[in-house]
Length: 419
Ligand code: 9B3
Ligand code: ZN
Ligand code: ZN
Ligand code: ZN
Image (cartoon, rainbow, N blue to C red):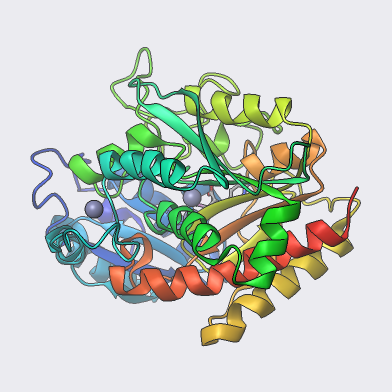
């Protein structure tokens, strides 16, 4: 049997048509390649059929003994499954029908007047008004700034959260929504700000943190992508900037930072999910965040929230080399995941990103570290693939509650270890 070639007969087709039902019948499979033949099969698949890698994010990063999550379109699913079975490539079906899972999340009705519902995913216009309202209602703790505009002209907001003391405080920068489809991420940034204002003055940890530190929170960096994930394509990852000479849209903002830009684990092809852009910081959204971080001297820790995989990652991604403070970062990550799991037992893995998830350049955490911020962490929140990016709203609360423990641990560490 000519393994891998049996799919050659397929016509590569990009799914077009209305957003409604775009993913009807699509499956997410978790493949477990064990040998070179299996890898070859997956690479061929990527070439011939339009498949969407969920983890890792591109075909080149596929290796043996590491599982690969990918979405196959409905029309190809059974052929792909047959192919996998023929070459003995073991797999699980993580999601039977992607569209069904998507629709569950769009169906929910607003709860109405009882205030903002932090246990739902929200559209950008709602999040935007939320940033204004929470700042207006908590003037002693929160100020809102517009740090730039997206490619399509939307404002990118930064909330400064912390008791005003009149002097510069050690600061923790946290961003959410770099990747459009990772909806739990903006939900977490909102949860964090809500918890801060709700528990300030009652909870002693939060009170100390907000008295002595400032948090700079960007609830959604990639606003255009986020809007697009609500209106056109729930599984959109990148920005929405146009690429001259190509019909493909968008750059991966987490490959666009100026950290050994595009040297590994990123693509020069605008049609790929990990396209690194035309140059470092080509994306206005990335530039806006990088400019703030360059200007703001007091940033001691950088936290960036993604999903999914349940991981706490730290630099480097662009090299297998360890940072000089590797031991300290590793201990912090260990403690952070301990704290997180203490609530519901959710297990996280942790370590330098290159070995823990995959090597890739242009990421925000590596860039922050090289800028001189000693404590940068990427969190990949729930789950481990059962729903992936389509994490149900019922998991927003537990995910955010447990993640708060990890963030509070890191913030307390930063407070107690000045530099
Ligand atoms: C990727 C990079 Cl480049 C980094 N420096 N840190 C974490 C990651 C993983 C995320 C990504 O952008 O692929 C997970 Se969605
Ligand atoms: Zn809403
Ligand atoms: Zn991400
Ligand atoms: Zn991710």
